[in-house]
Amino acid sequence: MRHFLTLADFSKDELLEMIDLAIKIKKQTKAKEFVPYLEKQTLGMIFEKSSTRTRVSFEVGIYQLGGVGLFLSSNDLQLGRGEPLKDTARVVSSMVDMVMIRTFEHSKLEEFAAYSKVPVINGLTDSYHPVQLMTDYLTMIEFNKADNTVVAYVGDGNNMTHSWLYLAAKLGFELRVATPVGYECDAEIVKRALEMAKESGAKITFSNDPKEAVKGADVVTTDTWVSMGQEAEKEKRIKDFAGFMVDSELMSLAKDDAIFLHCLPAYRGYEVSEEVFEKHADVIFTEAENRLHAQKGIMVWLDSKRGE
Image (cartoon, rainbow, N blue to C red; front, side):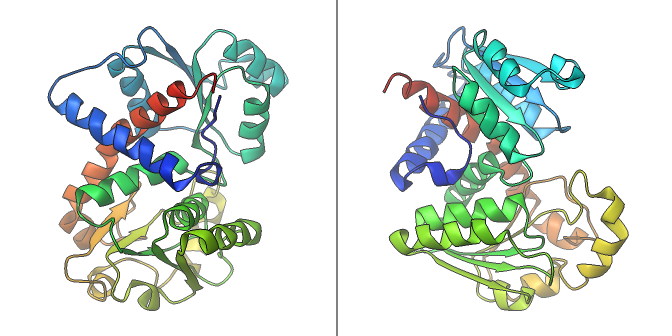
């Protein structure tokens, strides 16, 4: 049995197998061919953080695969009244076939997985957002930006950045990260990514200069400056991130045919300008839809590994 907690847990070939499954299943879905890969299976979906794309994509995804999704808010579970997480893991995993968790501390996800009898998927933690990165890579493939590519990440050194580090390190492409001073990536995660990059040949660089990162890039991406749980820091963050908005001037430094990615929700006028967002809206909303297809590929792949 395999869990899907971070991209570091998989080989390049395994990640590409999931992507290939996602591409196959997306084509089938578009043709209205709903193959019941997970017939009569149940996905337990535990949410401690609110969600639009994660909930809709997982719930629709398991349904289209022939199963059913069960939405479990932490407020509705005994977790909210202090039941130990390991006990919840034992109970829930004895009744469902797979679990997706969207939570705060990554350690919670790891503890749940340690006591779970079924595969556990990271729907987002404060440290990583791996399902989004599988989505982003699927989108890069569809827009012909996956070969010999240069990706520039501009913004906060957060869970999205950490997941970009692991994706680049595993797949071997060039990633340039630009963050404001004081908002750099977690040092231990950087160390691990750079170690993995030695094997794949990935080139990963860090700076505090967005222009340096974006120059000549094939893909430019960012994320909100104020994530859930950081609302009290909003005004300080807006000040500290001055100069890090992806606007037309910054995008002009990338290649002429560069694409812009955003995991959403996007706050125009902060991390991205209205002009850049709307110019790349087709890519962004294809990316949003691809959460559905990428996650179906992940779920089907995990199901295929039971008992190995």
